[in-house]
Image 1 (cartoon, rainbow, N blue to C red):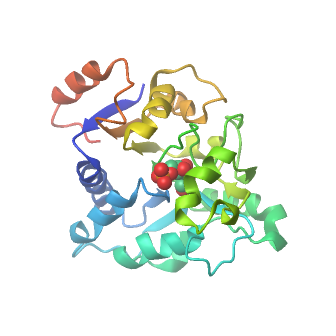
Image 2: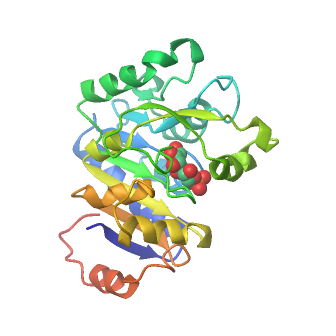
Length: 259
Ligand code: F6R
């Protein structure tokens, strides 16, 4: 099962995951990282620049989880721009090596296949950062998504559009469609690191970690993966039945084990 790490706050989670990522880059300068957008991964991205001082990041590669379909590429909330602003620029990565699914309508028919090919050609993702939606989605795999799915177009649920309206002037501006790595794609990454903060995520986290494995809660797909770290604050952990066991396990974790 997933290793569940309950931390004091988002900053502590960011530090923990950033340390792991820096270790990976030092070990393999060509490492392929799986990048998430939204609010959740921000503490990780904010913790990285100071830790990467003096580290060669020129060859690091990355693949974002998703993009809105048909969004103006110049829109500040297109994930291409979010990744540039929050990851590429502050970390000093090579923009040529960091990929975001192409949400342009003119090429959307083959954009999913193109993305899958690019991930495979890079040798797959080493560490995939994940957030989780209040409806249990990972990437933008909304309830009902196949566990075998690859990168493809999905329709965002009303709840996800409502949740993401905070990034736009109004809910009407939140795109209806997205292109997202599939659950199958995500499960092919070698290490999944799912982060969640706040009471609003507690139910989705409990379902993903302890609930039945079901397409109705796509985050539960993590239970099928051999190496998963779930890093949550107390509020997001508040609905976990076995929280005490997770704390006990982490407190007694051997020093030689990484994240
Ligand atoms: C973002 C993504 C989504 C978000 C999820 C949570 O690339 O794939 O699954 O991780 O919607 O969003 P936040 O972090 O904004 O609460």
